[in-house]
Length: 145
Image 1 (tube, helix red, strand yellow):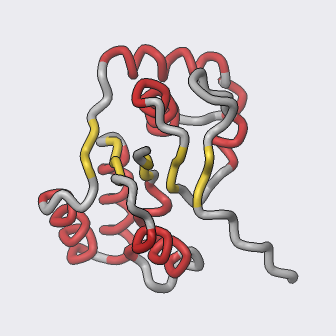
Image 2: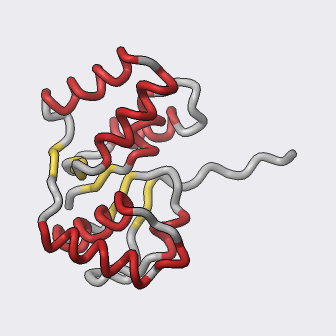
């Protein structure tokens, strides 16, 4: 079964100082399933990489796409229609277009696993094709202040 990849995990993979860098890097190294990148994630990742890590990080990410280190998947019109339904149904959750489109694409592709850092939005959502998404990696334990 394939795994969809979200913005935060890709940023963490690129930023060695990110608290999730090691966990995501290990997960990606160990996983044998294909990683699928929803195309709406690309501008978010590029923005973060350029803004926080610089042009070289953004270029390296784009090269990884050209070298097909992940499979690129584009949303269909039905995905966009479903994303609108999700945004309307979960209006108070403030998911946003990218998250709602990923949710719709997961349903269409019947994918259960999402590689992501911020589990909040996706743990609220109840997909149509399974009881809940499996969100990986596990959140890091909260640090005591």
